[in-house]
Length: 103
Image 1 (cartoon, rainbow, N blue to C red):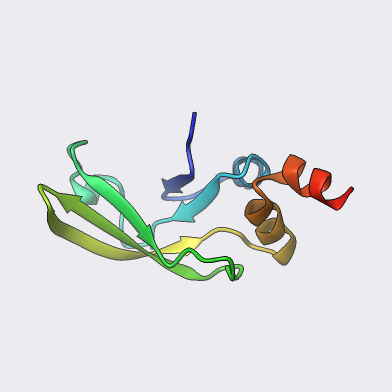
Image 2 (cartoon, one colour):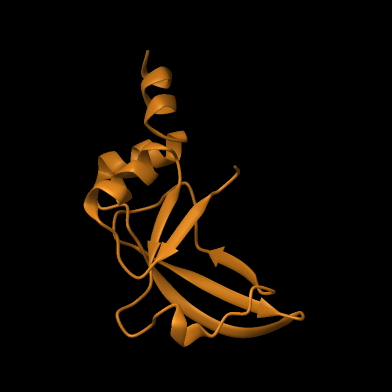
């Protein structure tokens, strides 16, 4: 479906792991931010800054929310790649691509 990232308030371990295995980036809101508090209407543009080939487990990335070409909110998200192995799986495009590249 072309999904590149999922942003959530929290993740169950298995759901987070499954996202990484499919090459989808799990990102988590800080504790003081909830989806409801952002008051999104569905017409916003969401940009995630700070994603490079040198991702590190637990690093912060920046979320920028824009509406009508005007930035309405900036905040840091926690990258929920918790281990070096998970980071490698994600950067390869998921666990299947990782294994195929290793053969």
